[in-house]
Image (cartoon, rainbow, N blue to C red; front, side):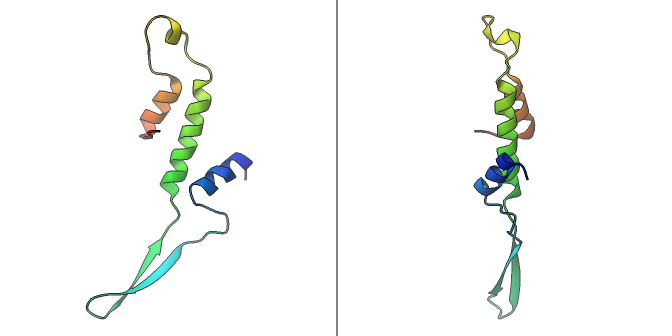
Amino acid sequence: MNERIQQLAEQAGILKEQTVKAKIVKNEDGTWTSILEYPDLEKFAQLIVAECAKIADTERSNSVGCGYITKTNGMRIKEYFGVEE
């Protein structure tokens, strides 16, 4: 795995060794239910999108410095995926 992707995975709480966690809880009626807890894949995806947006913003379009502001490529990427920083 790429080192930066590994860092983002750790930041999102996703580790290579991590598996789905299961908890068993007792219901009010005395029965038992298992609850599965999955790694936060949405957080991981948001971190990747944010990284891509940063890279895209390193090369701004010509119109950004021309007296009016347009959306940068990074802004468009984050908007498309619904990621806010």
